[in-house]
Image (cartoon, rainbow, N blue to C red; front, side):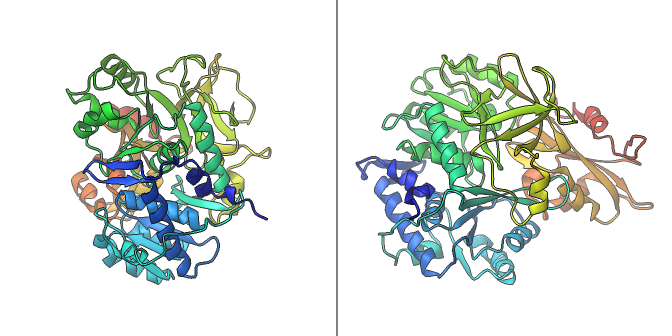
Length: 512
């Protein structure tokens, strides 16, 4: 018989407090959800999904605005034993067409505002059911689920059954779907619960992150639920309102951009942070300037950690002083159960302090890329380590520092921007011969993209027009902040574009 506890939802549900009528989620606009509400609503949506006659392993693709009901849909998908496929709300038609065509979901849930263009794409790809869900508790999904029973038996799953697929773009070709199992997500949640000192009945999480990627969906939500901790829920980040709620909370998770914006609020004081236990940062490099400014202003030292869509969390700065100090500019130590090594181009182990390629192994490492067995094989070493694509070093004390990213990945405001994808859209524009996208420092977003474009002979291109044309094709975070038109791109003797030179040339664009 299959162990029912292999289903991640069963683990999360078992951690609910005995008083199910206690508050589980309080929204910024004054709504309250009890633990019983989470249990009943996820049961009703799970029953709806099962009533559709779906098959084991079917995907539920979701592109909706953040809401507590969207979290309930995620929990219901786990509960019913299907595979959750979250999609960034900023994705446009060409992107959604690819994701739905590649994943072939049985169910697509989108906002009412986008249903007019999402539904035809889904239907053309063979999706059998399309529902709507809005952030005001409206939509066809909830209307139909309201007719379903609020009693549901959690689906039995094996540890290696898929729980979610997260699309993470590559530097060449189209996006890849990272397959995460119930065991991947459960093991990571359990490790972080202990490592970060979650306290059942004592902690309160401010949840101000999006819930379509690892940080907000898995790290934050799982952390609160598996410790039976309530959440103060913000559908959208507002620095002034978040700072105002710090006295009511104990834990906050954010990307560096959120910390920068809160530092701009005069109300951010040591007094406001008196009751806070832990501030965590991730998804993008935290500037040392921000790290120091936060400590001086609040008296708290931000805990920076490192993870990926393919691995969930890998490393963390220490939580307790017994483990060591939290060091700015580093991502701390490998988490319990994680094996992390730095190797040379030839695959040989690097000595402490030497920069090389980061490879990892452990219970959180994904099961592979969706329908891409060859690509999956390429990304793993013969002895089972995943090649992260990140470049870093381990110092004499064991602290891991990420010093760069191979393949020119740009992380802007916590979101991954892959130059090859953006360049593909630029190169398809009329009058464009070729292009290069590079990341440069930005005081708010950490990094932003800058496009350098070469026109075709006789074409009259303007940078502003190129950016304007991209706005209807790509999510806003992928749009270059500046675009320069040049006669040619710098190349080395092998003909490769020298992106390092371009980054150097434009690194001061947003200084000050």
